[in-house]
Image (cartoon, rainbow, N blue to C red):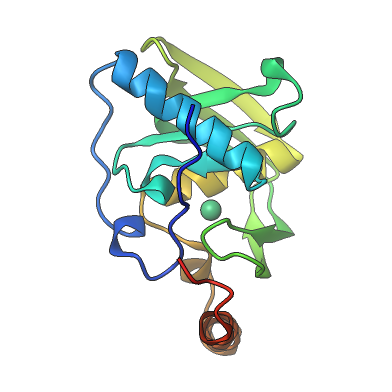
Length: 172
Ligand SMILES: [Zn+2]
């Protein structure tokens, strides 16, 4: 396993198209291991492949941040097939280090995805897990925190982004 650098907002790979995962091979397993390892180290609750510069429809989620193997979720080619409710939640992103904002998210979702060996599964998630799954699926569509914001809220968020950048906090 290798901890890889996490790309920050502004890197074009975060907004580039992501190709479907077609080969469920050793190379994919290595990328998945790197995603988990990099996410745990950050630390974060999940990581999408484009965040380490791999433009595939692939993400990992682990609310236990490495503590409980049972909570490791591999999402290859995921799609949200059902959403229920809506709540305003606070959210951050490893590609916007140090910044948080509030945005609406479904309270419950059902996601359909393939696992490490290509088997399809459906997962019903609520609360923080639903939020994490939505966040990672967003990444695979090139949709980032800032894309959820409008008007003055977006302007203020981008001003904070600029400040972080200028202070050198986002140096990569
Ligand atoms: Zn993110």
